[in-house]
Image (tube, rainbow, N blue to C red):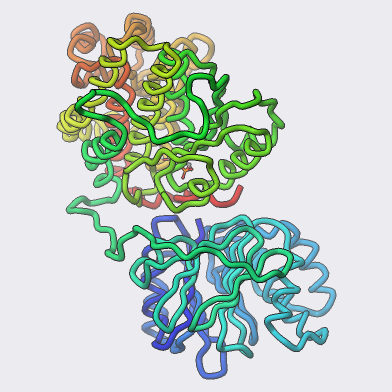
Length: 609
Ligand code: F6R
């Protein structure tokens, strides 16, 4: 999603803005640009494509100035081209914007009627003209003109604004899209996340919805919706200023897949007591013994972790669990059980739909628990309690280590709630906790199949146009996750199905051209899944089976390919079986030559609907 960086300082800002933008590259973008205040003019350079193209433009035509704003754009209104790239500017005002201005159409019509000429198809450009119009109508102070213009905007936005006639300030505004201020020595910064600002400062202030701020070199004055000056706390960000590297891997995604034994262990250690062999959660603002119902809410891959959580919590903790996609939940006006628990799962902690669902649940009197990877994110701050995934920054757009660490947290939550409610006897609790502690080393064993999975990917998946993924029980969400991973990075069409649903439609697709990935750990549903493999093969389908030794023994004569994963307690199988489906998608994408870390059209943090 779009990224913002801004600096008001004492030394030339262009190179530092570029560095900040590079740290935002992981969010996904298709054009980039900078604007600075340079000796009485606004200077601007923009380029379609990667930041390297913008750097090339700057080499040809450098810009100076000690105050500036930069942006990476992920196209919403208008094609990804230079004219639509941010900053948008006229002679007096330059603007960078994340989010969507929902009333831009009527504002634009009004401004066109007043003689303004637009040079882009974006919603953002209205902000530039609105400020100029306020000045033209007699608001002499450009800061006051900006305040008035902001008051006319509807929708979700984070804005950084340069004003030619006030070179001593930089304006920031937040309504629904995250924005952070950074405090330096004799300079101030602006960033859509703290990661962009980490090389410049660790001292961060998060703006709240409705806030707008006037930054000078010395500090910031923040005002809320009503115009009152407000004070927002300054906090120390834990993010490191070092550029996150690929650790010898070709892509961030590969590095993140291979980090899983480590980060799964880290996440587990925060909740597992090795002496007592029990799970201990931090203090929670609800009573786990009596909470009547859970609602699991998230988007994309995180929602699939939630679906595994639903299966676990129902079976092992005996709690009714509703599962919802945040984008559907937020508009459905769902009826919620009084005093229920709502769980929000999010890597970024900024996903617009998940955040909106959280706010709805708060109004409905739910206890809101975040399972979040970004500890300083909006969801982490607004939830009543947080169980962190300790995956570290995830840069590859396709979620991998965030997913498996989300599963670890959900597994711990299941055990803790199962115990608190008396649904788990001591022996079962010890078995499930023991199984969890084995996951890091078993995950390392799974990674040993990397080469074999690469070969299968190249031979069987690269030529495919369509792929089916099948699984039952907790392997069903994994089938959905496998299909999602494959389509998002390799652009091959893939569908995940509950294996029992195959006869109800998808079986018609099966022929010798459609690889069928079957996720079949040795659990109580194995035999049923094995029957589905028979049905696939009987129709000429090419089954690629992930199972353990026993399962492979049963299916190797039928399947085109089998991969024998370590035998584990079925409880933890979803965590381990996630890894081969990630590797399969990764190697297919690499062999197809797609942009694995920043696949087309996708963004890392989806901060707009
Ligand atoms: C897929 C993927 C997305 C995210 C989804 C939610 O690989 O990464 O489906 O899982 O956009 O994002 P977060 O977890 O940041 O809320």
